[in-house]
Length: 242
Length: 242
DNA sequence: AAGTGGTCTAGACCACAAG
DNA sequence: TTGTGGTCTAGACCACTTA
Image (cartoon, rainbow over all chains, first blue to last red; front, side, top):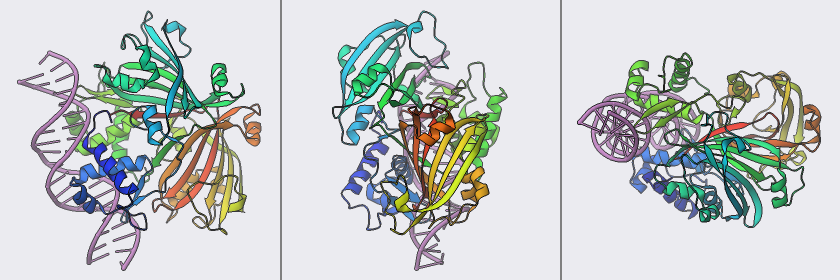
């Protein structure tokens, strides 16, 4: 979460309680909702909000009429698709370290972009900040991130920020509050520059996440394509069936 | 939704209203929440529930202090990742037709499975129903679905159902109510049998969704790997940033 | 200041599973 | 029947944008 609200604090408390083993019984069952409300001194609204977040990240599941259960830890190496925060935060969550090994930045006209969103009409003279970042996970080449930022929205990106978390850089700016991100997941042959970085054959597959980042006003901020190392990158999501 | 509840009916009504053009103004803005509550005679709870569902499927976005806006139609060819219902229903939603071209079914011991979930302990003598389905989207080869169902949970799968919606077949069964599905998304080289079906070179990439389907009791029902045609398959998700 | 969506309250009632 | 989670009510108050 951008601002720590009650829910994210409660989520952390529950995770801590689970990891200490004090919260679940021998059948991996948590206390009932009324008991958890009493223990954490929260209303049912807040509690169920937190439990829902724990469900969608694969921590627990709830069984109608029975109770809430902790799931066996799973898919340790995978990135949770709807993680809050930036990719490096998500890497940290699973105990890994994401670092930018090489980065470049250049201002280009829209016509020079290698790809564009389908659904946005650009002013013909608008300019983009093109960023390429080669990033490693625990020193194993992990992802090539090829991004374009609308210069009409974000004036400049200081070069030092390329090697840190761009997500946090935007968070700190005024008037650039991110609202939602479209993600299109597909597979493509790995581009040449990425295959060199990842030391993979030129005809290797790659997992591609093409995303479009919008401000909370609905204004497009950026669009990018991320080429993941297919040998180690996995995205994780829980789908709940109602 | 498995059972049509108020929310899914309201979602359909709102979509109909949007598509008829009567619900949004020239700025793609919907009426305010109080107006929508009045129009559809629902409480704010039900309305916001429906609007949230429309947000996560990319139909609308809400701007704090301003209003709710309809998004330009986008990514028409892509499958919404957290769609409700089966894959063929989702294909129908985007105006396409998913059909099974070839299918096979066989009972095998656990030891003969080509892959297994990391997080489930099988009884050593348990048996699986192995199903392979080659499925086309509007007659273009689209996906190879390689699934294993726990025979201890689902006794048999009538052969005719292999060519329809297995999702609906399970829905109709008693005691096999699906609760949640883990999805692991990755990229792998296309298997040989799939490359023949899809008429793609043997070293083509493929988009792989490996999933594990659990009953609402937490019991594992099935696990599968789906190899998608990388030229046409795209998964879509909206990530909301708070 | 007015109107919008976001969060939260304090319940009620329902659906489900187990004894 | 009891206790569980799932849904819903009818508000209140807050945060945000615009005028």
